[in-house]
Image 1 (cartoon, rainbow, N blue to C red):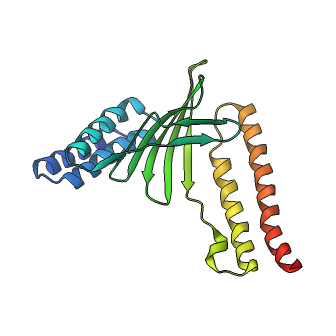
Image 2 (cartoon, rainbow, N blue to C red; image 1 turned 90 degrees about the vertical axis):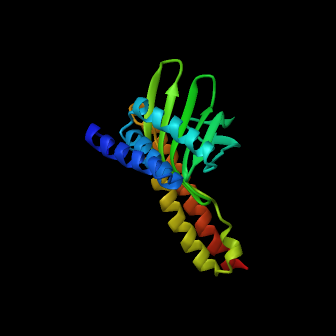
Image 3 (cartoon, rainbow, N blue to C red; image 1 turned 120 degrees about the horizontal axis):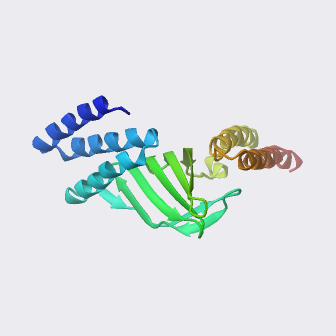
Amino acid sequence: MGDDQGEATLRKALSLALESNLPVEASGVYIALASAWVERYELDRAEPYLTESIAYADEHQLGGFLTGRVKTAYPLKGNSTIDAGRNVAGYCNLASTLSSSISLRLYGNCNSTSFEGYYTIYYTGTKNLARGTFRLTRKTDSKASGLSAADISASAQVACVKSNARCLTGCPRGDTDVEYLCANHCRTKFLACRGKASKILSDSDSE
């Protein structure tokens, strides 16, 4: 979508779903309207649809609350509770105050194994915003899979590459110093990850 014509088309689809009493379909259109503006970082236009979708989901028992903690790593290290979080038909929206000077908001598709979408970081002191994309996946215990040490090591190496790509993609944009520090941090994590992956095979050979 991302324009007035596309918004008008989706709003027509929403009206039809509401008139036909199709709550799942209507909720999906609400999400499409909100996410389209989120993807363009026009949060003022997305916010009304997010609010309406939550109220509609509550009325038809389609959504749920998100609780827990948000933990972030360097260069924006923080650990805080979720201030407000909702899951509406697989679209999650949560906010957390990481510190007195940094607030984080995440929007995107979520399920039992992953959460990916868009983030907004608000620096309260300077009143600046940083925006980008993210992808979070649930960690699994590869040792419980019954694979050989070679298979586990190879799988871990691939996971390191993917993790490094996500780390680089998640680096804040707009401040070259922060970007440089974040990229260096990602590289350090990547090298440490590869070292641990290689150690799996070497430990097996020494047994």
